Image 1: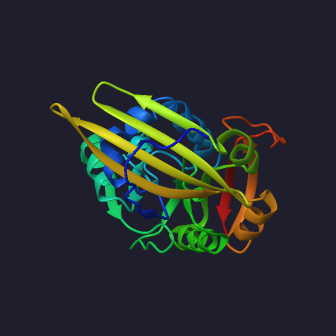
Image 2: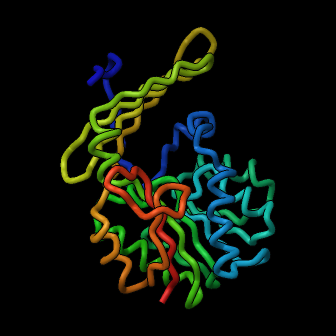
Length: 258
């Protein structure tokens, strides 16, 4: 594995998508995510399960609000929830007042009114530290949806963590910043992730460092965690209607609240 950049590391434990210091560059770092394509994919299931324009939708772990903004453009009443003040600040600018934004812990959030659907995208569930936190999150989502409400989320697989991400380093060398992204496989589906961001400030660079983890779970473990709260309508390989394969890297779960 490539060595870390020199210097001391300021460690900060993150249990969810926080990246507080990284909000300003997050969109550029994820410009290959294909937000519109993923939103259109999710929208296909909205239409299939009668989540029409005007329906209330939760974008859980909304980050900088890319999915929230696109769903609002399609006519949905969107509430974006995230634990990061900085992410929500970017989201507020991006969504232009068309999305309600709420700072909350995805494991224990509460809404005054139940909603018709909830999405949780880009491996946000993987950011939860253990299966108990996953169950708490599923309970909170179920409590926030009408009976029969639609819940769509994606997760990185064990295969991706073990074979693709494990012990890899990614470097982003841009004009205004430099980012080193190191992964360490810790076993049991868990990857420890270390980010070192250097942002240009005149002739100097200011350094920010973050440390967090992602955990991938066996499919049967997630099915069991969902069972008390949701009925699974389908599980699909990334952006498709294909069944999961051994080499699938990301899965989408389509669920209805019980």
